[in-house]
Amino acid sequence: MEIIADSRRLPPELLGLICRCRPHGAISPVTDTLLGAGLPEGCRIGLSGGRWAVLDNGVAMMSDRTGFAGSVVTPERCLRALWKEADLPLGTAVAMMTVDPCRVMGLERRAECLPRAWMPI
Image (cartoon, rainbow, N blue to C red; front, side):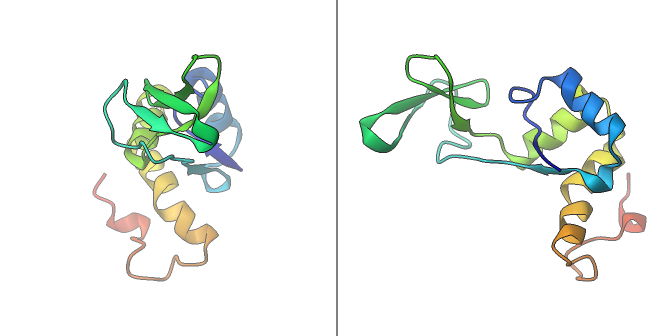
């Protein structure tokens, strides 16, 4: 199951419920980051068709603020939401963002994917 762990698409309570009901190896936190990732709040991002989005609390909102235009959540923001807002242990949140995606892609034996025993958390 893929989740966008930005605490906007999934409120913290729902994010925590999902993480408690499914084992972390069955959940893959992902981002759907647009061009504006890393830009300051309030910046405008050009969309197709001459439309604009405005960055607001980690989400690109349509310029009239009536709906989401996309996300600008970064992986470290997802990690923070899983740890602080979904109340997962830090080691579990780190594994969900690093080791588990490697396993899904079949890369868990590569040196870039640290085994859990190597995590100093």
